[in-house]
Image (cartoon, rainbow, N blue to C red; front, side, top):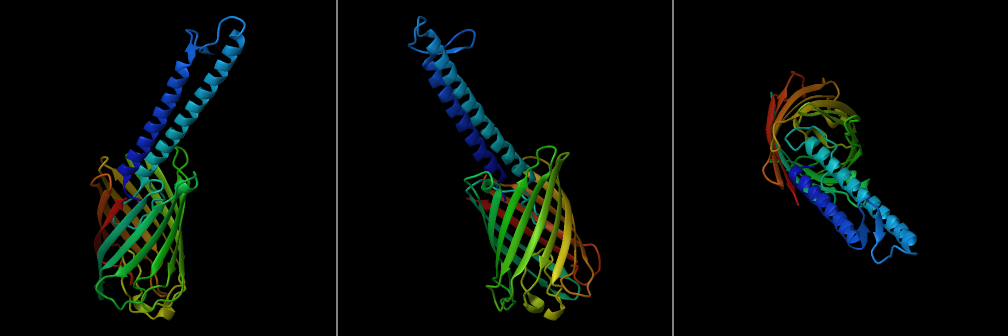
Length: 335
């Protein structure tokens, strides 16, 4: 999730290498069998007398196997290139809460650094920060569509926040990729482990992701549900774009929370994209209304390894848990 151009470059190189290897096998078979004008193959060294039938038969079988193998190599290369292009188009690396459901380059590590500022009426400003390591699976088609994450959310400037330093583990799986007819369908399962300051309980979040190329960009829809089982009090550290510590008791926490996001990524060029999305989610505490927000962000591919995405969050209602405004930046680094 991330270095789009690196993904394209790596898989493009794989395709070229596979094609070159297929060409070498074809050249090797062409030096030993002779190719007639009619396109049939016969093994070099076989005469046109009594052994002609056997030689032409063996050569035909060899040519057929070589051609089939070449077609298989090219098919695999084209398949991986197509998947890579889908990830490159649909990945989202900007300061927003959209989930894109896309894996990165198989077998690679990516580092996501994200920090921001959020303000709300009657509450002190907060500065959420997230460091997340992402590993992209390899070795099989299933694993190449898998991404594992390990993140640590922190509220900067306030060390005594319950939950500061908790671990968040994630498993994202792309089950179906956008093939022009079917959209991308993926899931993201996340678990919060209470390893941080005065933390307790284990929380879980499951997000369903749908993405479809439309026009000059990609449309996204996320739906998520979250179980909250911890007792981290009114100022629990949790990374989101509107993490305001509300004046509520831990007993008032809503133990099942839900929400959805709908957005669109407009690809202006290979280096730049604009992203807009709408968020509606239930409140974290009982007695509060849902939060409605607008997120606007940009995405800039600095080079093959680094992507930077600034963004803003705007509250669309005056409910208790809806912030007035927020801003931040995300940086993705691929190794």
